[in-house]
Picture 1 (cartoon, one colour):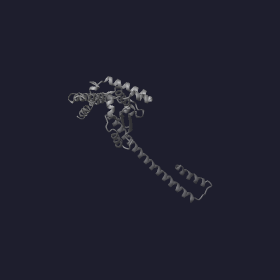
Picture 2 (spheres, rainbow, N blue to C red):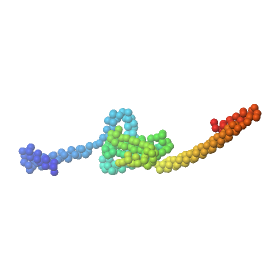
Picture 3 (cartoon, rainbow, N blue to C red):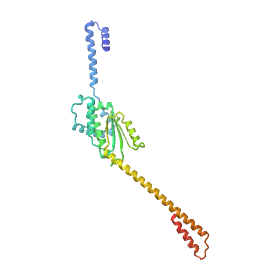
Picture 4 (tube, rainbow, N blue to C red):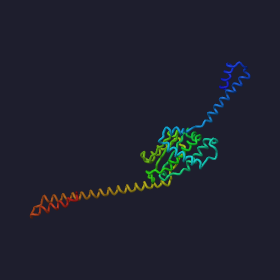
Length: 281
């Protein structure tokens, strides 16, 4: 109504024709133009600016090309049931989610809980730009299938947050062990905080987690046993020291009151004292 009135007023000012016919014609032309402009804006495809990113960061270009190629292979092998333009965003997210679920995980990553946070802009760009979509899928495949030499075999539970934005260099990732923040509860709380607004979750293998927890319990038991053995060893050493000290004190008292009746008596007494004291050194 506002736009139509604005067109009508301007038509009355700038036209010498009658209002009855020219107003409707001019107003209709204005509204058609506005509708066409809106349609063009709506149909404009989003771009991941792949080429621009590669030119800006040539040191990463080779890796980006590799993951994009892998992503296209995965997408080609498991295409959606209908064209992306015909999908609602929820349908598209469901399709991408099914692809992520099928990506295998290397054994070194099997104790890692991963949160994948995809921004709204990234979702729209993935849906519109095939190369950016391939970059995301290929990048996730690279991440999950990578063999982490520091985690083979898995020794701790890990947390990982992958944040995907546009352009590619706006993505980021972080990971830490479940005891990195003091306790497992603290590390888990940090994970939940960073995972706010997450899109997908990759959970660790429960069997691997159980093995890690069992190993930790065994290591704790062994540590307790070692501490007990150390305490017992210290107790025995203390008793031995006290015994030697006692015997040496008795020998010293003996020498102080000893009357030497033979030339070798003093030497014999010294050897007696030295022999008793050796255990202390």
